[in-house]
Image (cartoon, rainbow, N blue to C red):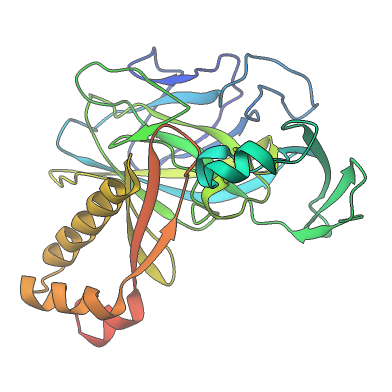
Length: 308
């Protein structure tokens, strides 16, 4: 189990079988950085083109198709004081008649926020609105990350699928472990698109976009096959479905969580009955070409059933 310090010099706006930037082993930890969605780094200098540029890919030596890659986010920290966000709710999450006649003047525009990691706050600085100097607590999260997809695809970081990608789920925070199906040798893990704060759904098309210092640890689960990204934190296990329309994303996420409960030893009829009354859903991205829905259940319930 080694520790690596990696400073990126190249970034990708499609997740695919690109040349690895670093070879690591299962159990290794990586310290690295990400740029924001527009390609701006810790100095607020644009160092690459926009479009959710990714750091990586990282090649994990023992990972093979049919395995699962576990990625634990040990540390996610904004590394500059300026964040930016769009200001207009996306038309696809509004009634058409509202879009036609009641949208705010001035187009999408950008707001700037002062991000203070000492006070753990983000404060609106410009433009001037009725919100004044609105201050929100930081909730840093990784918006876009994943592994190389199957069938030789290179999939834009604007969207998501079985490999992960641009899910924009606010639960992907420090302390979470995320699981991905492995489709290619080495898995080829990418990450980027950091948000200091974001509401559910990323309904304006951004969070408070910012660059990050990141520490993550990887583990290869040999011979364990999953279909969609999964994750766990202290309180929940969850599955993410990425698709459009939204009901298809719900189907993928719910099915994947049922499969997980089956693997934990819960008989199918019991699992269906349990989810019927105890399931919780969170909405990830509803702005991009594929939507994200998260299906989750409390670990405390599973512990009471003796299956965790």
